[in-house]
Length: 222
Image 1 (cartoon, rainbow, N blue to C red):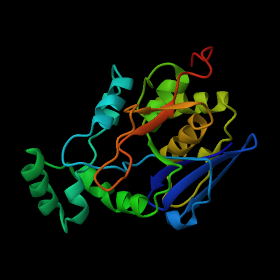
Image 2: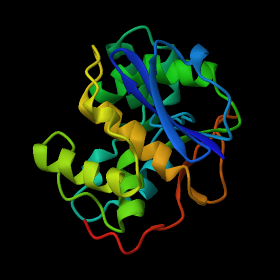
Image 3: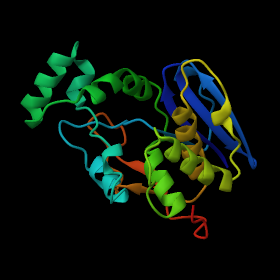
């Protein structure tokens, strides 16, 4: 199986590939450079609605207790056509009675690109949830801390992922590498979807996330 894990970075997109038992990695400016694969797991919302997505709520449950804040609400569908944050925030309040976070607003260019380049083998996935499924428990520390970085590296090394995170590349942070590695590693294993019935939004884009079925290595106790 040929799988790819993708995380957004200031430089564009970090790609970690797993094929025929070997990992490789690269950074591309746009998803036009994305190769074909059996599975492509990307840390980015794809399907959007005018309100809170069930997907985000289900993903948070996977991270209880302590790590639920790492899954934030996706922007609303109407934000895709808004020309500025104020307009998008007003539209969110009109449609759902709740505002739009700045964090979600800043993701919109990447979300537009994913939707424009969407393929059937592409699934939204979440690195923190993948960690929890691979390890058998949510991460104990934030990926922005030295302890969190070490925790994630321990898990990835257990699954024989090379240390791509040691690469020094402009506008690519260490957690960008770690997230892409986690997605590629998780995509190697049998998967399931949240929600299980795989709903789509009004434009046909998936409103569900992929994740490994269960810990493929229950003896790991890092």
